[in-house]
Length: 212
Image 1 (cartoon, rainbow, N blue to C red):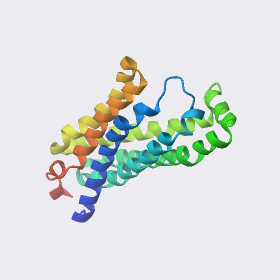
Image 2: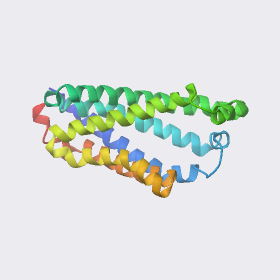
Image 3: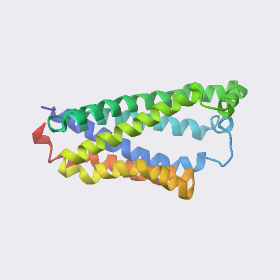
Image 4: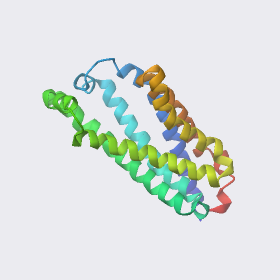
C-alpha cells in the first residue's frame, strides 16, 4: 500500500515537473537558442545557467514522480512495467547528472577554457563526450515511453495522459524535421509536459489508488 501522503507528493512532483518543462521551453529556450551560435558563447550567458538549473529541478521532480507513478500500477504492470520503470528511473537519473554537468562543468569550461570546449564540440565522429549526452537522453526517452505504455495498458483513467507523454517524445523529432529543432523542441515538450501534468493530477490517479 502506497502511503497517501507519499502518493500526493509524487503526484505533485510529476505535475510540477511537467509544468516546469512547459515553462522552460516556452519562456527560456526560444531566447537562449541562437542560430549558428556556438556552445562556447551560449554557455556563458545568464540565460543558460537559469535554463539548465530549472531543467535540473524539473528532471529531479520527474525522478521522484516516476516512483509514485510506477507504485500505483505495480500490482498490475507485470514484468514489462517493472523493466519500464527501471529504465525510466535510471534514464531520468542520468539526465539529471547531465544537467549537473551543463551547470557546473560545461559553463566553467566555456568561461575558463573555451578552446577546449570548442574542440569537444567540433570533434569528428562519435566520442565519449557525445555518448555522455546520447545515453542519458536515449534512456530517458525510451524509459518514459515504456512506462507510459505500461500506464496506458493498466490504468484506464490515465490513458490520455500516457498517450500525451508518448506523443510528446515522437513529436519532438517530427516537428523538428518540419519546423526546425528550436520549435520542434518547444512544441514537442509542451505536449510532453502536458502529459506529465495529467499523470500527476489527483483526478487521473483517483481511479488507481485502491489497487495499490
